[in-house]
Image (cartoon, rainbow, N blue to C red; front, top):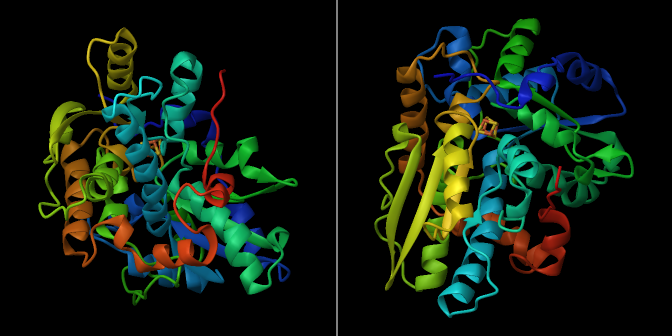
Length: 383
Ligand code: SF4
């Protein structure tokens, strides 16, 4: 089993740390970072720290020492992705359950660029079912360039957004033309967890001894739902926490109701959703993804929602993470670490994130509004 090679990222393995260092040295640029959920539970391994240790606060300090003008959390944008995706799920489910035959199900989560690439090439006839919500990386950058920068009086061309990802395919996602405006990318540079480790070493920062600090606000506060994006099943689980309350109209008391056994790689599950029952499918690894998509294509089973992650165990096992050399124990520890962060969060549902709700009040009005569709949604292409 191959557990640390990015399925489409090989062509994007190029190291981008010199571009980041150049931007940091340019007095005309403001350089900000966004850090993905899975990075924080793996980076410490590069410095001999315990597997699964959450080093998010140390990452903030290390990046500030390098000269970053702001350090934010992609997890915040994961909560935003859920607001849009859960709204799409709610709309499609309500239409479908009321008997509208024009509604397409299942809805597919589309946060994984390797998987998006895979479906564009291999299943072009299924391109109307993925959620159109952008991934957290691209939502963060869209907000940073189009909402945050103007508020701060910064021209988008002088703002450099660096994403720190567990993923090599995110470099490819950042370069897609639909995420470029007037020749300027939303995500300027994407580097991996391993590249971040190289930068920390290059700047001679004693990472183990660094005193941690909080992410910058307001694009730094997250809920437990956002953090589990970093492991298989997390995006769908987060979406269902919100969609349940919106569709059923009751508080979801048992937040851990899914109880996923992600080591299986392909999970098919019936879920109680108020008076209804949903069938969900979750797959990691593109072999499992193919099986799931072929089953959907054949119409053998009706799925309401599915999630596919290209890497084994999801982003914790991404191609940009410290190498695990097929050690499943390491992947399990990273997954457990994310689950622990989730369980210890005061807020565990994306729609409870007050900073996300403020963004809607101030800018978008409501999820999937016309304004939100322009900035927070994307398209897919037959390839
Ligand atoms: Fe990247 Fe995560 Fe997809 Fe792997 S599962 S390709 S790390 S987004």
